Image (cartoon, rainbow, N blue to C red; front, side, top):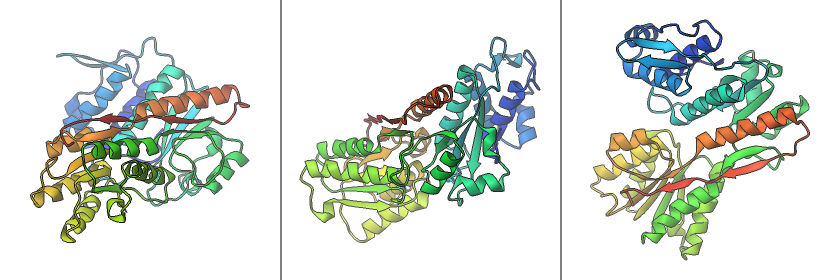
Length: 361
């Protein structure tokens, strides 16, 4: 159950998903046509196809060319024995299309709900809500309804204390804000930024700028540490060669503003490592506005690998790919083991990102 409405693609997907799971649309039933669904949800047929494709990947529907789309749940076993929720913070990106990170979280959750036999739920926290405690109260969510929780956010000391005080089973997808000991399955952000920066350095770039998210988040501090470690290896110790700036990764203007300021101040750089899809779009747009060529004048690495921005820019961008699908799979498997064996020790697992080398370097 989605506790807060998402965009039209996500809303359509979860409505159909739960209608099929709950038997409201029985096995063998024919779904409404793409046009009928588009009219009902006030969205495009492209959005409808995206939702149907996700349901097809979960083997909940089958599409018969020229004859329609049918529910295909025969042999799929559903159970409410365990009630698992992923809790994620809302992001206001530059587009109404599905946020790539949200999409991967949702697909991983629902796919493994089918495979591992649990009831899948997705809870969204408002962007301005600092902790899940206030959000759950506002949304009238009873945390005791859930056997286990996966937090796709940085947990504070107060949040951890609340969870442990109620003896909740949970795992996070980020390390905690402080030094509390919790189980988390995270991307190795230090190594991700390190490999991205090192790749630029190996290409002969020595004036590299790193644009990253808010340093209040530990994962972003880890990225900066990895970036600086790569510079240390190549002897880039001058402050002018250790430049990194905070910005909002999912806002085009945020990335554009930093790059425009550097250019107006005549600060030279020959390499960029940028966290976030829309920040990368904004930065590249400004470089093009100033007639700066990629990669001849400035080599570019994006942290993460979002194909939508690359298509819009018509640019194959070298990227640090974060394996979110593997991350959510490992987190769910850990949580289910913990439900079977509550005395299991705390676990910390780091999943390695991959460097995808393309034309921008």
